[in-house]
Image 1: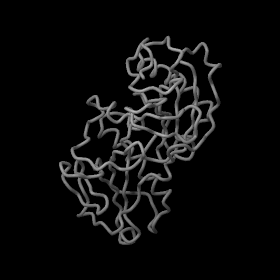
Image 2: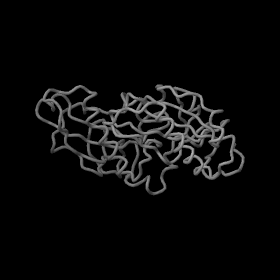
Image 3: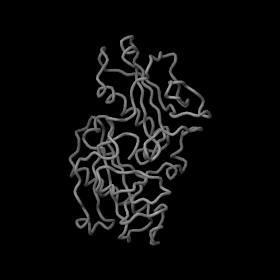
Image 4: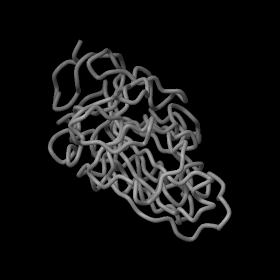
Length: 288
C-alpha cells in the first residue's frame, strides 16, 4: 500500500476455500508500508485566505499552494473544497484535524476518480487545512486533493487530469505491485508492476465499516476479507484451479480506523516472483 504510511493487517488463504486451514499464517495488527499518521497532510506554510483557495478540478503546485491548470506540471489535483465544523476555537491537535478531514477527503477522492478502489492504487489522498495563524483568524477551510505516487512513495509531477480515471479502465495504470509477501511481511516493498514482483492488488477494495463504528476484531476482519478476496482474486485470475497463486489482504489496523481507513485491500500473491500481470492468466504458467 502506498501514499499513507499505514498500520496494516495481513492474512493469507488458499484460492480453494476447502484447503484454507493449510495456508493461514495469522494476522497481527502490524505496521508495514504505510501508516495513516504520516500521510502527507497538513497546513500550507503560510496563511491561505478563503478567497485564495483552489476550486475542484484545478491542480496545485503544493510547494507554494498555487492553483494552476491541470495541463501544467503539478503534484496534486483538487477533488473537493469545504469547511471544517465541530472543532475547537483553539488550533486543534493534528489527530483531531485528521479525523475531521480524512474520512471526507477519502470519500471525495473515490467519487472524483470514479471508483472505490483507490486504496489498491498509487493514487492517494492529500488533505490541507489552515495553519495556526489562519485558524486563530477564523479560517476553517479544508482542501482535499489526489496525488499520484511512485512505488517509492515519492510524489509524481504530472500533467493532465485524473478525474474519472479509475472508471475508465485506468486501474492497471496505477495498480500496486509488491516485491515481498503481503501476507507475511510487515514492511512491504512496492515496485513497478513491470518489474519482477510477488503480488499485485486486484479490483474490489472491501469497506469494513464507517469511522464511527466500533473497530472490528481481527477475526471479524479476516472472515469478511477471506470471503471477499477469494472471490475477487478468482475473478481477477479467471480460474479457481491454481495452486501457485492465492488471495492475501491487508488492512489499515486500529490506528487508522477513526481517520476513515476502514477498508481491506486484496492481493493476488504468487508462490514465486514473476514479471507481467496475473490479470486473466487462467491456467497459463506464471509469466517470467
